Structure formats: C-alpha cells, structure tokens
Length: 200
Image 1 (tube, rainbow, N blue to C red):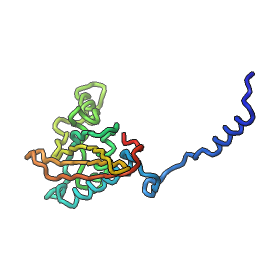
Image 2: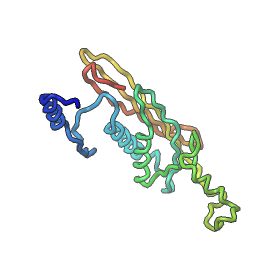
Image 3: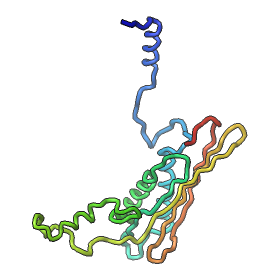
Image 4: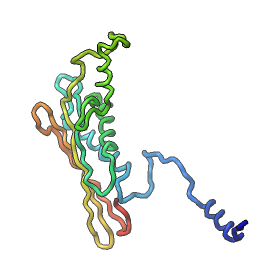
C-alpha cells in the first residue's frame, strides 16, 4: 500500500486547517472586496435607485389612486458576463409592489406567460371533473398598462496601470396606450482595478 510522506501529510493538514471557513454574509453590511464583475450589490443599487426615481417622478402614480399593471418586456444583457436580468427586474418588481402603486402581470410576456397557470386554469372550463363555480370566468385577466424594458451595457478601458470597467443600466417605462416612454433612467456603475482582474 502506498503511504504519503509524513511531511506531505502535515502540510495537507495545515492547509486544510488554514482554509477560510464558509460563512453567511449580511447583504446590508457587506464590506467584502469589490469585484470587477457585476455582483448583487450592483443590482441592489441599480434597482433601489430605479424604484426611488420612478416613485419620485410620479410616473407610477395613477390619478385615481388605483394601481398600475406592469409587464416586464425585454431587458438585454450586452455585457461580457452571463447575467440573468431577472436579478435586476425582480428587485424592481418587489419594490414597486411594496409601494402599493404597481402590480406585475405574469400572465403575458414577450416569450409567453411567465406563469402559464393563468391560462392552464382556464382550460378547466366545462370539465365535468371540476366544480365550475371555482373556475375562472372569461374576461377576468387584466391587461398591462405599463411595460418595463432596458439594457445592461459594459465598456472596458485602460486607465494607466489599471483597467476601468463601466456598466450602464438603462431602463424605460412605456405607457402601452400611447407607446410613449413616461420614465427613463441610466445608472452608471464604474469600477477601477488591476489589469489582471477578470470582468467576465
């Protein structure tokens, strides 16, 4: 049987003992190192600023005090990273919902319904297996008033002995009756660091 030298065994044990332990991070008090890529702090910042600006602008304040119905359109990722743009739009949706001014429809979308159950539940009409008093009637789905769309851009530059990575989160809110953008914002996120840092 092959045996590891004692020195190698001791070295491996020391390395295992010195490894940084896994721990929880409080997002509200995270003072960890900044990455050149986009991380959750960047999405939190962009979403918070977007919601605050939208509410302050009055773009989501319905004159009669009712809530607008919003649909999420396409938010394009034009960066070098594999970004799921839902990480941004979900935070915006939650913020708007909590404001009491906007609800988001999941029954319609560019690539089909986000939640297909709204349509599937209506397929139960006239089924003898289901109590029809609990099946959704025709004409009860609500059409959206507003559409949220946008783009995330990335630009890399050399800044002396460092690199500068610029992210621009561009968002638009469109009134679906008129087709006019009633609110728009661009949030820049600029990072500067060593040239050997990876930004993708």
